[in-house]
Image 1: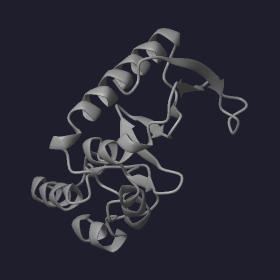
Image 2: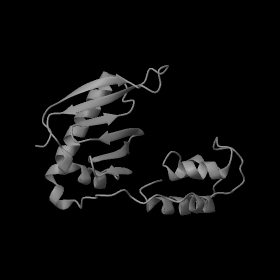
Image 3: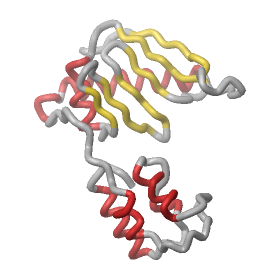
Length: 173
């Protein structure tokens, strides 16, 4: 078993002093560097760092960053939610470690979707229904994973399908 015990702490975000939001920090009993490339594969990480090793991915809308000796989760909710997330991650990481022989580790970031390619699939009306001023701004946010095909209501079913297929090559969508 890679992770058997850990401690947790809810920490107020330093950049949002007016916010009541807190981050969850899970402190690990031992270094889990070796499993991080496997987590990058399984969780389809969007940011992988080789030195020091870390991976970032989204989990149910929350940002998760795994470091060798700690895991950070954005705005986990209350203490019960934080404990449930901590335990789920512990179990999942241990399971991935046990199955590592069946998983191809990934030691790099996936390539990113291109703004101009995304723009090709959009209606280019700058209607603002998505909440952005232009389709180009919307495409830029899609390329970062902050927005998705469902956020553009004027897309036809065919356009949406093509955009989803394109983004799927990058583990987006």
